[in-house]
Length: 201
Image 1 (cartoon, rainbow, N blue to C red):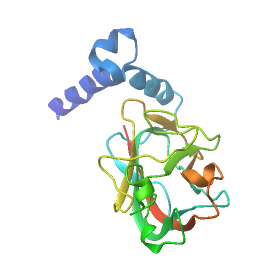
Image 2 (cartoon, rainbow, N blue to C red):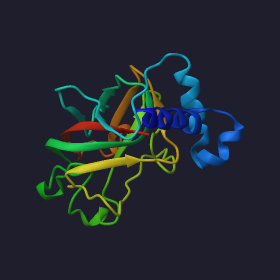
Image 3 (spheres, rainbow, N blue to C red):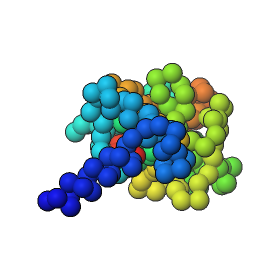
């Protein structure tokens, strides 16, 4: 018991204490730890880092391809999110309803015009700020991934180097890019429904 108490005290001192003297220890995550300490002192209950937590309740989150119809998620937790994972449940979307083979979950499948850029989903806040991305794309362009395809059973937005702070009631929006830009909606159709998980860091 004494050893456990010593380890707990040591963890609090080394990993939680804020201040410039901590920067060599926490390295590039120093600012994250500083901010977490500042928030902890306000009495907000943060989620323990290192866990995936489902953000939606028993109802799935669904986004459509037209009509300004993003999937809406409101968080019930406070903390820093390094990744958002979407787990496919049902439905499909298509960039061209005239050809059924183009149906997918996250973009457009089997379309020769989008062979190299076949994904078109984006995560934003309620002010249209794109979240958990390496580079802001104001045109919500089609893109590709080395890991995910338009029919992958899961899809992950990730930015561990620049996590997003969320709080209870913070709104996340899941967009089909062409719907966000009101582009080519006369051809697109469908709806994809998912469970949404957040990885707190």
